[in-house]
Image (cartoon, rainbow, N blue to C red; front, side, top):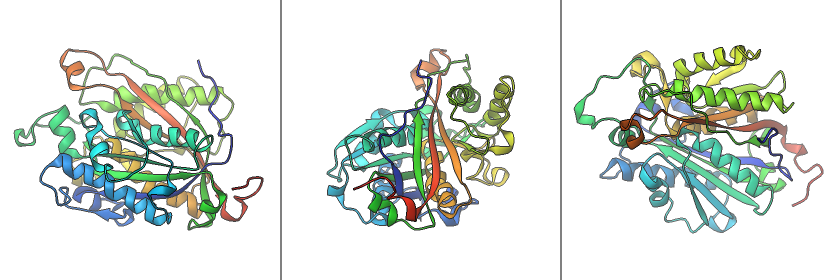
Length: 348
């Protein structure tokens, strides 16, 4: 088993990010931070087309912030929750950039950043990572038609309508053009292992994904890379999954409760938004990272964080056949470095 993270062969920076969200997300506590908020349809005549449009808009925003055009990007990695990841392929169809489609369920944001980092540290100059989810497309595919009006259990999470896009670059000049005193640098990455603890309740994604998050964190600790001041940011565990994560880690003599936050607990006013255990979906961790957390790194409010987007690797057929739900959690270690030091020891 891979016991150590992968370390980039050269410095890799997140030089820009774009976030696009729906109406419910725009009304939440982070609403003012998102680049663009819409009415959930984004001018389209279906939910699936709306989700594709969110990806197109998010990538365009990230590219404009980085002052880039299509020819400046060597690779585009993207994924979503809709069958065959059509939101990504249709939404990004207009960009003439080499494309790799991903499926990591709600872990897709971290998976995309992880792969973009490895590519940028070796054969590429710049890569883009994009992902999205939409409440209405996810409900229609995984649960019930919206018209059914099914009652949601207390452990259920609300799928975020949103898309996040990130530009990853190994060029020091790109990093120096970013705003803020600090630049987010990706120090290392650790792919997750598939973990299945027998959870069969499709309305309790937090319980299905928490064991995978614990597994990745413990492997990272065993590698010797875990510092005492690192902030842990999980993607989609919500209240239920976060509590389970604390219990699993404490059983292994690791307590992170006082230095952990979950994107699924940051995006909604839970009581007012009927979000129950919190938020989930590919777009959940993506828009929180893009709009809030990276800005906190750039300002120095967050010095260092381990970003772990978590995913439940199931589909409707597997659930209907009574199979348990495997989880996965990919880790991306991000640190803020002073913008005036990014050229140290590295050339274009």
